[in-house]
Image (cartoon, rainbow over all chains, first blue to last red; front, side, top):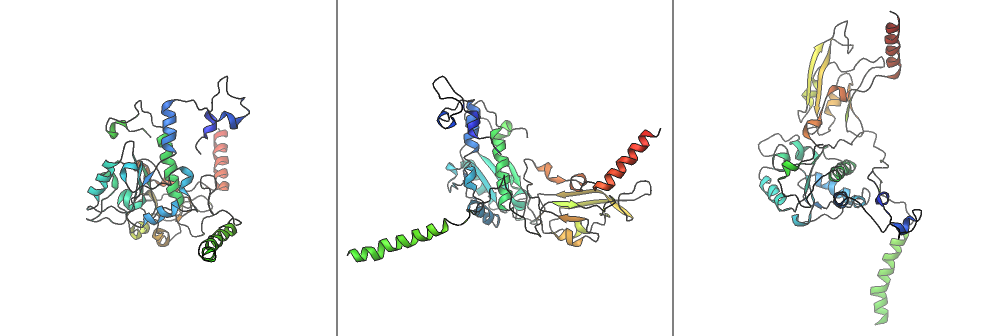
Length: 187
Length: 166
């Protein structure tokens, strides 16, 4: 599980003693990169991009039984400008691929992609002329979630994996200016 | 007027709130996933496991029926003949290479049904997500279940005996 914020609480002479966690929690000191990554990782807003049956499981992940809101990702945005992560849920037909790419390009940096399910990740059973054999031919994918469809738990595991990756990002700039491929994290 | 407000506004709100209040008594439906996992259903099909017999021999005989039954064509089997010196399975042949592309796999369980020896089974481990594509080729070493306790300890003791004898 991710570290809780209370563990990086720091104190100066004015703050109460360490034992009084509730009052001391108002001061957080840390590396700016670290804090930014924490903020990014714990509020990954997904883009509503359900393409097929996987979208049903994605909706189920938002509902109360699995509750993606526990990880700060409950705000599914219909506009790419406000989204951080694109969950490609379902098979991508060759006709849909340019649309997918355009929506990805419209998302604001930093942005991530989760490829959910067998069809989005590799084409699955649809090895034919109509389906893109893996969405990574169109956009760079950060986390692949196998399954047909992945259960909500499996998608949550993929999201946690992505959070781990986001927390390990090391950028010296606030905004990525280089193309993503050169800034890729070695994982 | 007041009676209308009572009938059309206050009463429906109270009924709704009462329903909400009654629901408060129930347990929470949320499964706190990373800490607690929900009980898998008995026939849940997730990650494949290659089984062994009790004496440690592999059940897989390398017949490629699973690969033939697979609708996504995600299984690759390369078989090799058993010899008396190096015996992996009780049959004539064994799987030298056994690879499953987890990204292609749709977890339909046809391989499990096609297998004549019950060597490949789908178990409930669903945490398969990863970062890069090559990591999803699951090899035989990853799929094969560990040696059973007794056979492993016997083999260890044999090895220890051989080592200590000279």
